[in-house]
Image 1 (tube, rainbow, N blue to C red):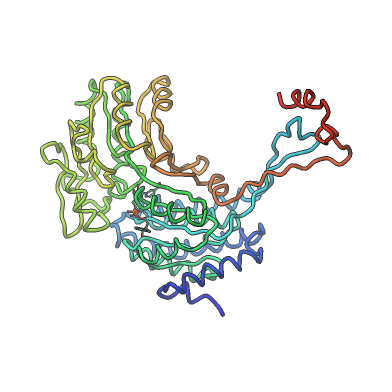
Image 2 (cartoon, rainbow, N blue to C red; image 1 turned 90 degrees about the vertical axis):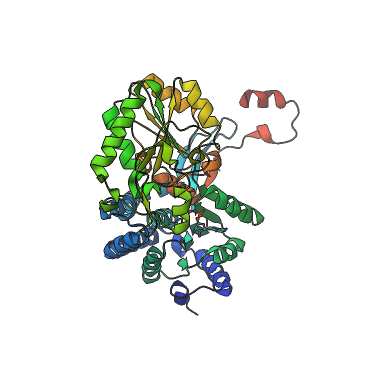
Length: 469
Ligand code: NAD
């Protein structure tokens, strides 16, 4: 029986059980493991993404009002660049890596071999529905795995294109697409996978991890949080403001690594706020709803939630909204404190609270009072000492110095959270490692036999002490 239908039709519980079982059988054939097969499938995925680029961008416009530039930058272009890098580097990534051999285990040699994990479940969120589906899938294929993919029900147009791409490109025994909401995801989570790669909120991440624990399935959790952006008194304010505005309001701030709030040094606060306001108006106009470069909020629920975080008394720019089009203007709130509602949860919308500080100790205390730890931390300062001090004192998944968000666009850096913002990391070689088992292999020489470790032990313990010093 073929399983092609599973990539094309609605999914029942039996379909899900069936497809996971078939993927296990397919993985056991060993077909996915060869370098050639990985390269062929990555090329197929690349060709499909190029073929469907226009439809993907149209779907992103429909679901999220995403401007084409942003769709290419953070979704299709991002994925194509990721696949191209992987195609170029895969041979060297797959090569066993040498490690030192300790005195006790001499004579011999030691290497790490990378083996695929097996059948993976990839669950994607709504905010970058294409990028956050195909980036982990690229890593899964590169590492020689099979995968079942579940996208978010909140972006139906994107889900339809993703399903089409997957069903046309791959057999469901190898890469399967499962349509569904919580019910289907719950059934999926009851199945046995070798690895679950989840991107989404800490709340659902905890549900995923609990379900995975029942099968002792390892998880990678790419979660969110409140990422601080610190503007110190020596920051170059013009460039700081340019970079904060473009990274915060990208995708209407529905970005896991968006700067959630700004902590600005008291001495430059007024100048910073004035430049921030000017920059927002310059980029998006007096009425941002007419700007072609600004996205919309994904759902009515999120629209209401974000509007509820805005305190109009503290707004210095923005604050307008339109329920029909789910538009919320790029908004800045000043003189915010931890007591404001906007500081009580990850904002995930175009509202930027600005808080002030006088000493970095205040910054550390404030960040420490929020959930541990943020996904990212951004530092604007010209002083290498200040930059280093903040890097050392604020624990975060990743960081940028004098920029925001773009560390996630560098495939040479691991991307992931720490503490409540996630477990594990991916992108580039780290993505390959994330979907691989690192098998440590010691090859002992047979031209001699070390008598030290054999009984009778006699008084060999004193010799052993020398080896294990
Ligand atoms: P979400 O957690 O609501 O949903 C993520 C996925 O989980 C979706 O596919 C959804 O269908 C599924 N899901 C929802 N409820 C479920 C349940 N009860 N049981 C099983 N599955 C369930 O997240 P979202 O709203 O789509 O995305 C926003 C969140 O994701 C933010 O917190 C953001 O910071 C985070 N995020 C993190 C990254 C990252 O790389 N670290 C990237 C994007 C988004």
